[in-house]
Length: 242
Image 1 (cartoon, one colour):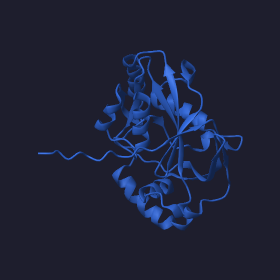
Image 2: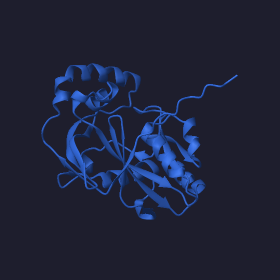
Image 3: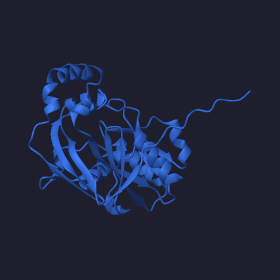
Image 4: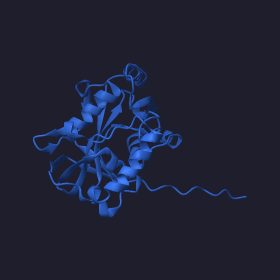
């Protein structure tokens, strides 16, 4: 009897990007204002399910272009409740935004990739990602969204690793996955994955409420099928370990 094969899910494309020029605008995000009542209802339910959620300020990307290897655009400041509601409703086109963020991909001396698993009380609990986070006002520098600084901050805060101890590959890999624009960079550490994971777990264990609860080591591309991961993270594993 013939065995039916599962259709292979199409992976998002990786687009090389050399630089970013994302200007912060003072204009309000109109969609969030128009949906304020729905956002409030959504948030009140969300914090019942996950009381640790915090409605702080975050940045989202509006109009943008990609030309000659540079991602140019504008970013709005909004609150996490509006951001999460927009994401929960499937990032509708009329919202006029994309979720833009930097990803620090930790790679060991053997070429293994080390990602983090989100803790149960976070908005994306159980999902496995590179070191990444939604940018906030702390990532604004001279009126621009500092993707590089945001990425290195997440590497330090989530994993306890310093970019100064790694060799950073030039440029970014832009992966557009649904309404997300992930700007990913590889950080090569001259240490085996076993030692890197130990350092990262020690850092997590010292925190009262860490964003991550586990470090996942990918040694082969096929390992990603065993984890809950967004499409852009699967694409990275497949691309870097193929």
